[in-house]
Image: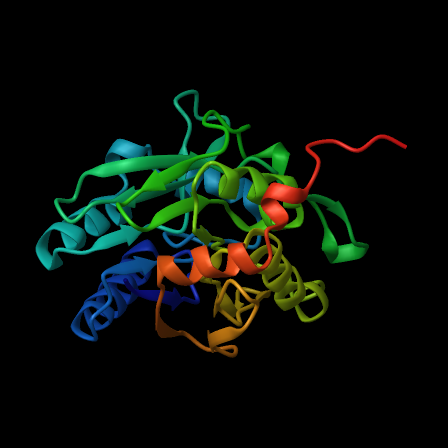
Length: 271
């Protein structure tokens, strides 16, 4: 399967973000992509997370999700929305939620971010995503597209290897890791963690990211597609763009035979 990871610099202007998404998805499909993956918060990104309660729409009214459904159907491709931010029914929180959209435009899988970004990096690096983002209602999610089976995650999930091992054991051979990664930890941790998740599961990794600066907020960028052996097949720097690569499920099978870590590891260790 030919896949594409789209890197965006989303802002608070949802219409402008939608225009960027449409342009890049159409171009990726023109270049042969059968699956297109967007980054986290593709529909809207704001430095003050509390503003999402004013900016976001309910899922049924979200124009970015509607656009992605239309593009999937028109272009006959799979679209992974990365994640979109939706207002909860009560209006007091938002959902950080990803969809897998089939070539008919229908959602075949929905995933809510499990691990919320609650950290104390110091100063502007302190962040409590759980103050605004609702807890996951889905748990881990695997989407079976046939030979390709997608394990879903969002950004901070990347730091929790048991999630990805569980996804691989449930059949995933491609891990989707859309992100809006911090520029504090990005240069140190992003590539190392993505490579580790690929190697320890024997999966391809598709990591579409937010990049650049907007309204005083910076994100790391460096979207990547990584092989089951940990080879970086394609990578962007810090500007919007698209990378494409082929993912071959047979390579996952071969890699796991050579390095059968998923079968050899004990489920729990006690010391």
